[in-house]
Image 1 (tube, rainbow, N blue to C red):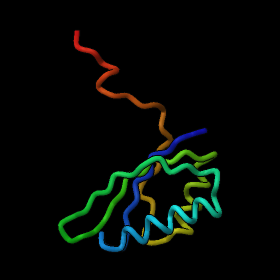
Image 2 (cartoon, rainbow, N blue to C red; image 1 turned 45 degrees about the vertical axis):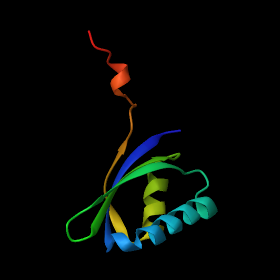
Image 3 (cartoon, rainbow, N blue to C red; image 1 turned 60 degrees about the vertical axis):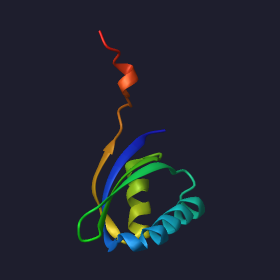
Image 4 (cartoon, one colour; image 1 turned 135 degrees about the vertical axis):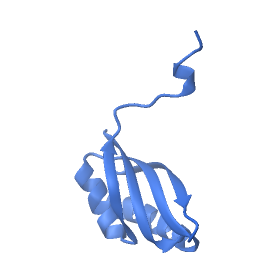
Length: 94
């Protein structure tokens, strides 16, 4: 299944993000069972604004976009299909 890195800018502050996370999970489980939410990195600016970088598995980009649209609370900034993963262990010292 393809995997996607999704950068999202939210219009709610960090204190509302638990609500957003619960809604995202419920929406995926109830209406988009093909989507797998792997994990997210959350960035909070000095004013409390939230941006996330999330990794999802999904059959196609359109499904990820539809999930985000139904979730609301913000918008997708960028979305990229992930070509692969690497870690420092993949590059041993010479």
